[in-house]
Image (cartoon, rainbow, N blue to C red):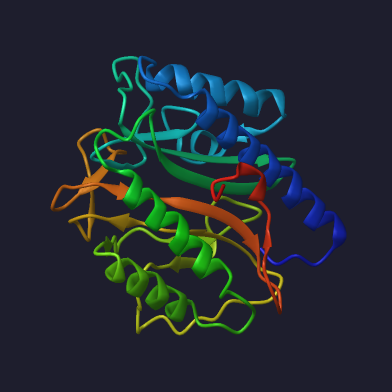
Length: 254
């Protein structure tokens, strides 16, 4: 969406603070020995208390309040009472919700407890690349140039990017134009970021895969060549200068 009034900005801020607070609280709550369903129920309760509705549940009938992906799962993982978190697991939580007609989206990967499996370097790369990309975004900048920056930064660190997962516009619905904010230079995408538009910018930084494939459950995605992936995501308002990071409260960069 494009922000045209103060009330729209206020609405987007409220929805964004709801998802950002939920993500932060879920990250603090997550620990070894817990099931992903327990973690999801905790997040779902927070959204409910804030008057927000889970966007994947409302929009797509997703079987959970949030997406929780563990280890080789890249995204859209279904919370389960059979999936127990272990020390050193790489986990991704993606929280998106609707509040008073406004949608916001954010996510982050992190390690459960001690980094016994050496995932922290990948997590850190994803965070840093997102930060670098976001602060280069302003009205008039080509979307493909931001994708080029993300892929270049990933390669520098010895990683790849997933080419069929992208960031997107957001606001009055979960996915809006621009529909594809890729992590690589898509030379066919001539679109530019527009001032006052709201977009969800996300990284998909991987160890060995470049394509995400959907499992038989119809939701969970894994890499075409296995390995691991880290994702971090903020919802922002594009300006003429530094963007407004609506989901800053999630503290994924801390």
